[in-house]
Length: 568
Image: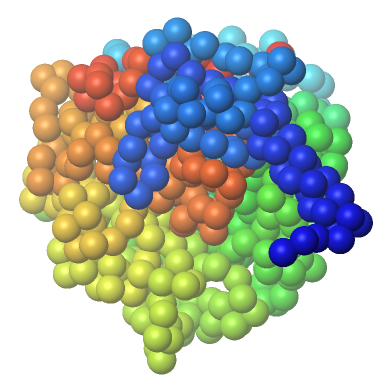
């Protein structure tokens, strides 16, 4: 068939345009293993990027022949490994920024443990930095990792630091706080003040006197209201610093799990929008609005509002407290102290939390629920079952459960059947495994914490996270811990070997499965044609490294949209 000249010319122009697009990659990587984390877990020799997207993966010869031109930047990995950028599905960016960037950071993830005396010494040293009229605000005290075990701070202890400067210290779990008498005075909290709704408790002794211990974030509010608020510039700087720290671990996408929990939803949404509008964020972010900041069941933000860089997708509930803080809701009592009858408490009544969830669920929001103890897991699964009743494809809603710490095999099977995707704070095994096993919940329950092995066998997906500032962001550390399940305290032991998974399964939990959990698997999480070129370069291939050593692999570069992230 003979084509008309104009039509022939047009076709030739299209062909040239296609050839030009195909033959003009911005960047090509080769020279080291490229771990795609695709459905077959394939490794390839080369990867090409054009306009921020992956346009080719395959052999070096094929990719360079079809995509390399004189203007293409070629990066020889020199034996280093290229992987999809890591996805951190559960952090508290703003809280981490305030606690670690603006407050006194008392966190200690190394040995030896602190003592009450060393903590008090650190606080006294920090008094010199408190301005007139200011508060000594800190984070990271952890009685379950303090010598002696469960040595908690009291108002009297903090008075030895200062009786004149108000002091507010948050426990490493984030679910417990400690204040001195000056802080109680300024906040107007007395022995007769009723406990706030949402699980908050002003702890009292046997005589009905305040001890200075606070339980659950609602109890913090009177104190936060009296503390000098950071300036917008301070917040921006601290948040950017935290994001860069996250990016330095190879994370390219992170989920902020408590938007609105500190300064209100509208203000915090505006802060994040401003940061991303200035192109000042070195990572992508998915946001979950804090349910307690939304008492009316309405939001000024629409479900899925945003773009591929910043998007608000869910509502976050906190159904119970901290396992290591002895406030998670269990079906049987804690084993500490000996003969204890205490089993923690739920933060909401069953009907109350379900009614709130349903309103947001029907609007189209993803629901995420912090559920540490098996009693809280029961409540969450019951709510989720009702939400999903009659839904032929429950997996489409990807309901989340955070931590899933103390659990049963039956709960795992029910969650997997509902398409629930849990995210495990794998640091529970590492930093608190010995405490759980030896003191807090006993060996039988401790060996089941973070049950990745059971979820794998049940056909479900799971992810791994830091819950920063509860533990430090470090996806490679999560992989090591999930595969070995070694606790930190000597003598090291394996906690629940049946719940360990393979290196490949753990890698998927910090890449493609984490992307799936936050509805971003269409753009990130694996190195496949059409996805954004969010990449991490590692000095070694974790698939060829002894599991215990994977945590020590150095991150050599983090890339978003095909461009290296500046961490300066």
